[in-house]
Image 1 (cartoon, rainbow, N blue to C red):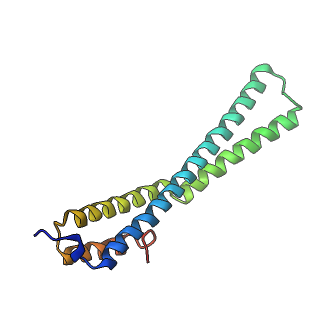
Image 2 (image 1 turned 90 degrees about the vertical axis):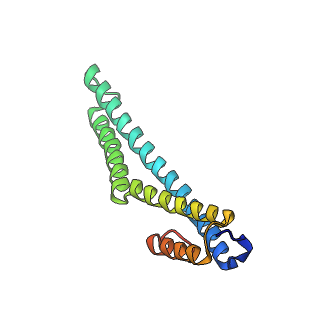
Image 3 (image 1 turned 60 degrees about the horizontal axis):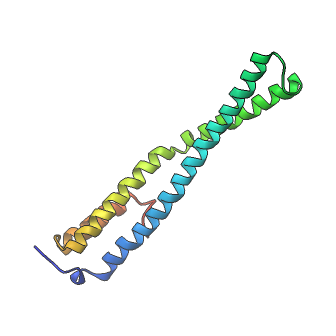
Length: 139
């Protein structure tokens, strides 16, 4: 059954658009956080490995042995914390879930524009998305 978007209640269309804006904002923020934790972990572990490897290969530290070991420990700690935070907050799982939410919102928005769903189907889909993704959508 073809229907015009204007026949839909404005609150459904507004809800879809506002939810998309919120989800896209959260997705960008989470991607940035994910990238930062990955880069921090990689750089810190790389510096620790290079410093320890150079010291072992040359058999002479860049500074005193105490400072070299302390620096390796600090870099290793940074890498461990970064990796632990990423795992603890399940950033990759959240990215997956938010991407799924955005995909459903995009599909729903397309269905509204194409007019190939009834009001009831659109309303039901909005409710399902609100139930499945309460942390990411507009209130």
